[in-house]
Image (tube, rainbow over all chains, first blue to last red; front, side):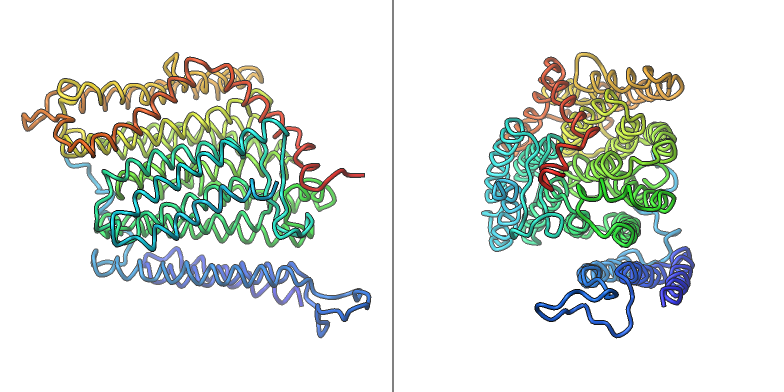
Length: 119
Length: 498
């Protein structure tokens, strides 16, 4: 199971890096969504993957030998919520960039850093 | 003890909420000033307690460490909180003159205080995931402040700032996940001992992930490009608080993690840091030399100065850490002040582009004096604070036979003087190209007071650190001793270990 997850995460990261390196802001955002979900999956895997062993233990019972750690799952939830807020902002920002700079190509966005310092 | 540790975070949060509720009228700016003043008092009390009792820790929600969220204040945390409060107060006073009603209505004061809460939280937390959360609080507030007003340059700079910082955040998150998978804990004090049992090679890989994540935040070579792309675009008070505090949170996180947790393979990690430090210093200062706008020059100098702090961490001798801590504190005061002064220059002389302004020395001598103090402190002129900071670091480098890096540090100091004299010559010495005489009296008396009082206060602080360095160096020594021997830190968080 871990192996499968590792491959999946690897593919996601590779695709994300490819998207983020392309010269287009919208693709960059898509890449960012992908890579952040890859990071979330990494944390998820770090908490051990078990098949059909819930991390809830009845009162008085001992912890089973193999059970998933519930803490990383809680961390992932937090990370997803924070990530959602960040992406909402990033998408609006990119939209504003489109309306006020008329471009989504980072190479053409030189307003803050003009290519030649004009005297 | 917990309330004392929680207060510096709670105060700016409450201030932010109040400021948001009153964003439609002028009350917000006064709430912001009042909130920063209360924060300053709280951080002085915290500092006193830490000086008296050593490292203090508090468990939030009474969950015992290492399970709950721990807040810890050692000397480094306490001084960073204190200096944050000082800068917050200075900038919130300055904002009365600098931030217009439009920005106030959009919630400038709420975002500003939220940013301060994030910065303070990052300095005071003892839990790695909690550190991530504070980074996010800080990041979201800084996004808002950066693009507030929505001029096209701001959007342009904002896109680059947001893009690179989000990538860094994801690196940080991945690092946290892997570290938890390897050790089963996220409490920093617990991690310090738990990493001993982990696979050391894997641990080095994770260390590099953290180095990249914090390196982006700290704006080190080759990860700094977001900084000069964005720092010259927002309002001056926003630039000043960013320049003073944001990158320093990255430096603080590096200092904390690479002395407490990732000190297992210093031959590898700290050698990388040494190279990074050298390149950061040189590239930053050369970038500054090529610029002709006051704020852009100052932005590149942030990068260059970060190199000095990383140098202290990379050498990892007691004296080098003393230098890094001293540098950190001195730099925050000086850098924030220089951006505030650039704001005044813009108001009275009509810009920050050096070729379009001038004559400030003749017609605004007070501003010229106030500029000389931080500018020459930044360059390392005795007897100002920057001299002692650079002296400690160069001495530390020479002590370990680091001739080359010591030479680089000195040469970069010289080039810093070049940039500062460039600003001095063109903005202050030469007459104004349009023949006007920029006078401070062209500001309304309220604006003049609101702008010059914080600048003067920070300049006085720089002079005090410079002329009476003894107590500050002693403090930095005590703080470096705590960083290099984290036993007190670990005991404060986890209790006595068997």
